[in-house]
Image (cartoon, rainbow, N blue to C red; front, side, top):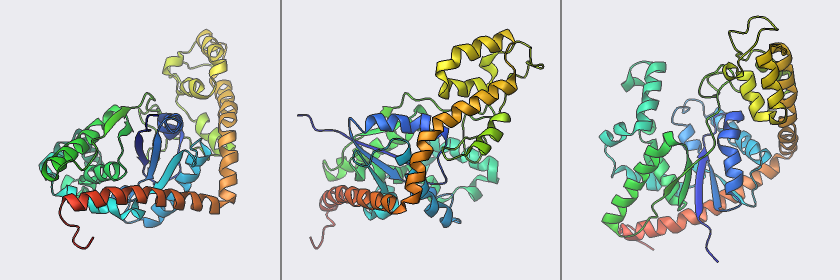
Length: 337
């Protein structure tokens, strides 16, 4: 029988999860957990790179994100959910790897370039907004992957440069210290990036354009009623173009059974935007209902969530210790073992 490969994926705990996380990642993870040894990291150390001044936010979000994952189909019997900061071996590997990566190489990473530009736009001068920890997060990510012997890493195309940098680190380490680490492969996700209610190509917490998995009816209604529709449809009976409407976009996510009718009526001018939004609200709440019922259970049984995180972290650390013992031996720094 062929041994299952290890998959390592993760998420930064900076707040509750939204539809972008669900359709863009979690659906894929729920499928992968049936075929692979799946490790899901709650990357609180990485979250602290730009939330170092607000540790309460990160600490609270660890449990909130865990609850969202468990409520959305992640099975703790199939997936190992663990907390990054509770695996000291990852921090140790990060230090060793940092000796192998130049500052110039980090600045050349396309993914890092984009994020630095975003920070520059938000906070001003580049040198004042980019910390050592932020610039070096690809090195930390390489430590995440290799400490758990991640053979496959689910990513979108925009994250491929991070995986390639990890592969470079592994090859360089192995060339110096002998065959020690497994070189990971990117597992390209088929799930799309979900647009925001405002039409932005990305749904995000900071963009205020997201529907969260925990949003109640009142909040969902307010958000959907404010969603962008076809700007050329002025009056109720004007023909509309669903392709230019975010309400239709979300019908396609949560109301597929009635999608053809929505499309036909919109183009014919027999469907007003308000009625269309009201139908979407109902469909959205029906979609969120089973997730929120599970969420309520875990909120009321926080001890179960804590035990899942504790057990998962202990399991992950066993694997990380195995890798670290090999690393320290081959680096000739296992002085007292």
